[in-house]
Length: 388
Image (cartoon, rainbow, N blue to C red; front, top):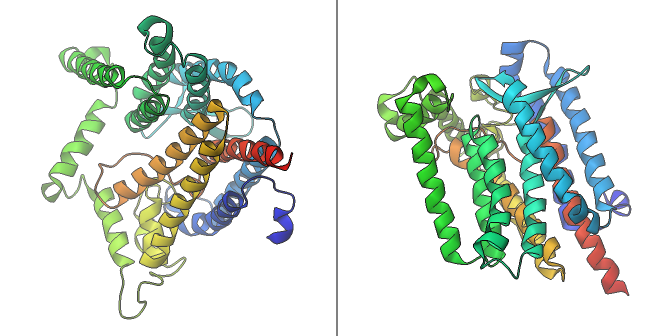
């Protein structure tokens, strides 16, 4: 590890945490793919090999980006935003449907899929960061400052919303956090929240009144998940996923035999064969069952340390754009991890958010490491200035 760190610039703690998580994801994905083997065939090694390729691409992306000057991120942010909009529109019209949701684009010739919303989240963060700096003296003005910053958030959230309510909510929430940090007047932020709620209710009413329009093709799924969560005792079959997740966590509990240090043991989890996407959306439940409470606490601690280091880099920067990017990236990673944990523990209704840097998935992992590479590039710039 020490030899490898010689070639990696920036924050060493972020590098160490990232490398540990990427390495452990190989072990956990190999263990958690039982359900895929049962439903789609193949062997665990097949999925391990595929995941290893993604890890290689992810590490390569992070390494390549962290050597770049952060000024290029701002210069390319507008292009990234328009590209994200184009990809989301294409996905909306021609996206491949998985579990009833058209969130994926198929990569020609290689048989892999790409979730355009993963790229869109990062593109929105970068572009809004640029606009907050550009319009910082005009944010009190509705036409010249407020709306130009808000519209990109609304566009990205709106295009994701149709097929992925939770991701759209996360994007919108991160946008609000960035507006607050960017000193947008609170009353304007409150009006945006109120307007967003009103618009959501209006769209739901139209969907209910004229179902043939099919404005919200997954509305019934969202509604059932919320209602089932509220009345989970009387919806045993409908809540099978959530109940299995909680049972997996229970199986990893502290006992007199393991004292909380380990759960069932790596590869010995019983519920991963029944949890859909135990390697992604229900990652935390599978992790607790096999690793136990102690290592689950360590995992949470690693995410908090990662957030702290990212925020520290952002707040130490004398460039507002760099600060906003770091805050956006840090909040994005923590929120995704938190939602996965809250779903697995039954606090949130079932929704699709995987564990950053750990879950199996190409576009999500590559986007996360790319974002961390940007944070490291900002840290490298700060290091150069301190040496001068």
